[in-house]
Image (tube, rainbow, N blue to C red; front, side):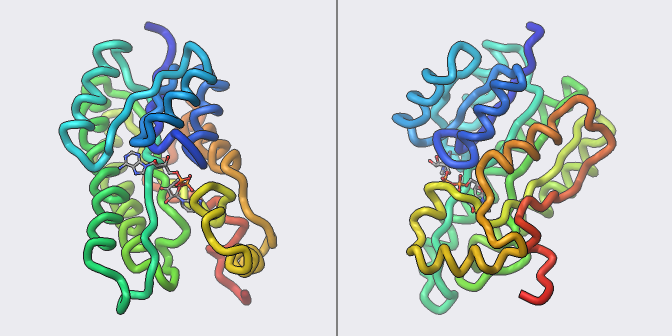
Length: 244
Ligand SMILES: NC(=O)c1ccc[n+]([C@@H]2O[C@H](COP(=O)([O-])OP(=O)(O)OC[C@H]3O[C@@H](n4cnc5c(N)ncnc54)[C@H](O)[C@@H]3O)[C@@H](O)[C@H]2O)c1
C-alpha cells in the first residue's frame, strides 16, 4: 500500500471539509470522520475514490478504537491525523451551566486526547507520523469562552507533551490556532457580532477554511521536518494583541 493515509476529524463541514479536500489534492487516502453522517457521507462520495467516511464520536473511547482498527485493517498505515472536531457552548461564567463546561471539554480536549492516544500508539510502532491538532487563538483568552478557551489551552499543552514523548519515534506533533474563520460555526453568530470580530483583526477580514488547510498541508508535507511542539497562528494577526 503506497498511498499515504490521513484521518481528519470534524470533516463533514467547515474547516475539516476544506482540510479533507486539500488532503485529497495532496494525494492522500483521506478518512473523513464526523458524527454528522449525512453531510460526511455526501462529501466523501463527492470527493471520489480516495475519500472514505467513517462515523465516530471522538469523545467515545470504543468508537475511537474501532475507527483506528478499521483504518489499520483496510489500509495498513496511518500517516497523518488532523484533530479538528470541536464545539462551542459560549456564555459568561456566571451563566454557564456545568453541562456546557463538561460537553466542550469532553469533545475538544478529551476527544482530541483519545485520538492522539490511539494514533500515537500506532505511529510509535510505525516509527513515523504527523499529528496536527486544531486549537484556537481563543486559548489566549476570550470573554464568554471559559470552557472553550480552557479546552483549547489543554490542546496546546497536549501538543507540547506529545512532541516530547513521541519525537524520538519519528513523530512530529503540532497545533494550529485559527482566528476568526468563515464556517457554519461562526456563521451562527449575529451579523453585528461578526462585524465587531472582523474589526478586531489587524487584517480587518475573516479567514477562510482553506487558510487552515494550507497550514495543515505545510505541517504534513514530508519536506517539512524539525518542527514539533509548536502552535502556528492562522489568525490575521489577532494573537499579536497590540493596539486593537
Ligand atoms: N471557525 C472558527 O472561527 C474557528 C476558530 C478557531 C478554532 N476553530 C476550531 O476549528 C475546528 C473546526 O471548526 P469549524 O468552524 O469548522 O466548526 P464546524 O461546527 O463548522 O464543524 C465542526 C465539525 O465537527 C463535528 N463534530 C462535533 N463534535 C464531534 C464529535 N464528538 N466527534 C466527531 N465530530 C464532531 C461536527 O459535526 C462538525 O461537522 C474546531 O475545533 C474549532 O474549535 C474554529
